[in-house]
Image 1 (tube, rainbow, N blue to C red):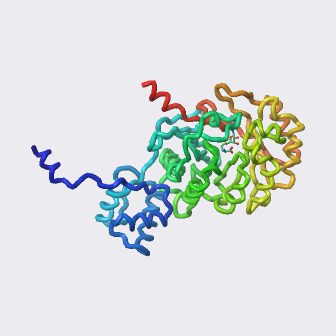
Image 2 (cartoon, protein in one colour):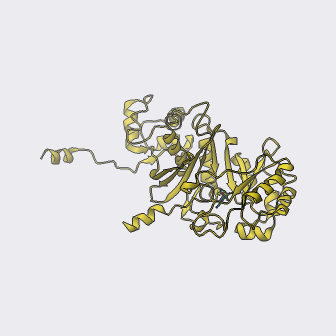
Length: 381
Ligand code: SAH
């Protein structure tokens, strides 16, 4: 009886869909506060409240059910009103795997059930988070595991930023430290082609690099692209991150096969776009990634051709020993071929160019990400 009575007099349950604040710019938060009619006036008041909330989310790392209750510099009535209308949440961790080398891979489930992977790689002097920009990918690079998964959709800015928040939760790195961060670098090298999701990636980069929040310097954010040439100078102007190019071949015939987007934007076009990357200098070089495939692209002649191609571009070279995955049509180059290739680059002044594979035991290394785990399990259940 009591229960029925209580129900009949209780106010209606939350009448609005709650608006997610993660992923919004400060200005968007301010506008949302005004529009939600929670007693925040347009202008200075809204900007100030937005800045406070921003700090709670990105400096203090608050989230979850009682998130607004912890925002102690807001009045109690405002906190209560915000609770009704807004949310600050995290993607659900579907699985977490930790490698023997400390690398940690998460499979994250988005609100609609879409799954993406995200990898944290600890090193002595830094910690790098590799984040995804799309669910799946359209590019079909022949050596890449993600390429075997069709594109499901782009990630939203909230979902891209959300990956950083999950990693910071895991590291317990709240409030955002000024020095000696365990999460110091971000690479957009997970699933997807970031330049095919330009606006959301740009918004996420702006949030991640905001000095009053997560505070990661733009130079410590690296956007990796398979070579969407027309978007490259634009990315430099509008995002200003470090840039990495997945080159992988030194002639168009082979690159057409390995990275099919090359048919649209061939090597010359791609390198021309790179030369036009704003702010390029010897202090700010472009990283060229080159996956070493046994007997395919690992000959000394190709190393020399690579040097010739990159001659007038301030560049670093990152050799990536191929990371195998089930059914992959390639093998990793032999140690001697890798050494020989690297030595040619080193003699030309490129320092330590071989990337050590990390997290191989949990399929977390470059190009091994694919997010089929949960749907398969679900259908089996
Ligand atoms: N679409 C973007 C970002 C994702 S891939 C891009 O192509 O740059 C991140 C890096 O891992 C790319 O250089 C990619 O070519 C490389 N990669 C993909 N599959 C790999 C594999 N199996 N072994 C080693 N590197 C791989």
